[in-house]
Each structure stands twice: as C-alpha cells, then as structure tokens.
Image 1 (cartoon, rainbow, N blue to C red):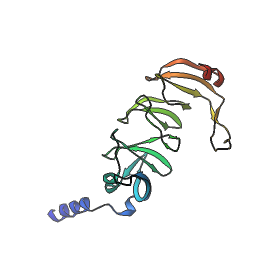
Image 2: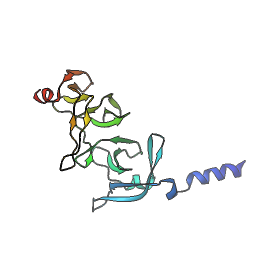
Image 3: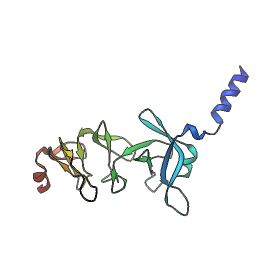
Image 4: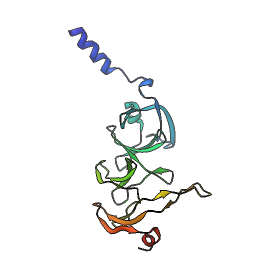
Length: 184
C-alpha cells in the first residue's frame, strides 16, 4: 500500500510532458522584450475549457488588470494566474478589450458579456453585440456576416437591432433596422 501511494505521489509531482499540452500559444512573456511570441506545448483542451502548462503560466505577463491574453488554437483568451481561461472575441487583431468593465465572448454561437472575474453578466441572447459605450451596447437578432470587404472585414447585415444596458435589459427594443439603430 505504501509503495502504491509513493508511486501515485511521484506521478503527481512529475513535470508535465510536452504531449500533455499539444496546443501552441502566442502570448507576451514577463521579460524585458515584452513581445508577442509563439510558444509550443502550452495548452490542452479539457472538454469546453483549457488547461495551461504551469511553466507557461509562470512565464506569462499578467497586466495591471491581473489578466494575461493569449492566442490558443486561433482564438483569443484571457487567462488568470491560476489557469482559469475565458474565450473572448477578437477585436482589432487582439483580445476584445473590457469596455465599461465587460468583455464579449461567444457562447453557443451567441454573444455573452463577462466581467474581469469571468462571471457571465449578460447571457448569450443576441446573435451579435458591440462593446458597451455610455452604459449601453448595440445588439442584434437575425443579423449575419456579409462578404468581406477589400480589407477583409465582414460587416453585419439584416436582422433587428436595439440597445441593452449592463444588466442585459433592452433600453431600446430590438425591433429597429440597422440604419435606425445607427441613428439612435
């Protein structure tokens, strides 16, 4: 019995093997260079979540917000020093910033809003939602991505549009056309 416990303890204490973390990560290390670089064998999928190799967590630059950001499997994530992760939308080739304390994530192909503790504040109700500005966010139902323009940006078209507050309540009902919402 003691040999079995010792063997289990040894396995728990062994460093993670590269094969345990098959995904590469792109992140800024806590170093004088402070450059966005690619690092192999950094993360692994665990169901719907991620597990980050402990050595990489120790190497990441955590900013004054207490979070690091990384590209893993072609998606941006915010990471906490304990390894918790939140998939966030890509905005201007970076992780979606926190706007008025909330960031956006796709949950079941709909936009949800999360706080810095990764608590979901607004559930995934809308097909798209913009960052908050002046206490409200533009959202839509039934909108779709259109063909990319010459710069590769895909505009949203169609659907019904309106505005929500930071509790997810519609302050301008989602009944407007996109042009009407733009005039609001």
